[in-house]
Image 1: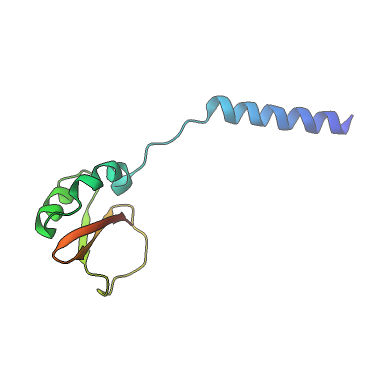
Image 2 (image 1 turned 90 degrees about the horizontal axis):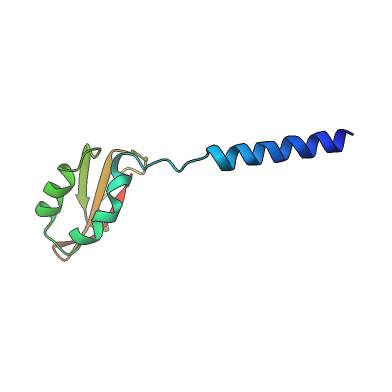
Amino acid sequence: MTQKRLALALCFGLLTLASGAQAQAPEGCARHEARFPALLGKAPEEVRAALQAMPGINTVRMGGPTTPMTKDYRLDRATGLIENGVVTRITCG
């Protein structure tokens, strides 16, 4: 009898998750990640202006591969990697 109750509770829990679980929309910087590829290969100033105009991005930092940067994660921060005078990568955090 206990195994039946456990199985029923497990099934009920899975059904509840499946029916009520909805994917949450990304917050801050992450909600704009689909727009980042269009900014690659452009001048850092242009990319900075575009990122600053995106709602949810409060901090934009740019730097080269050897530029020291903190590794803490912030939802509202975008980071552009500059190589040979153009932005080659944009990440959130």
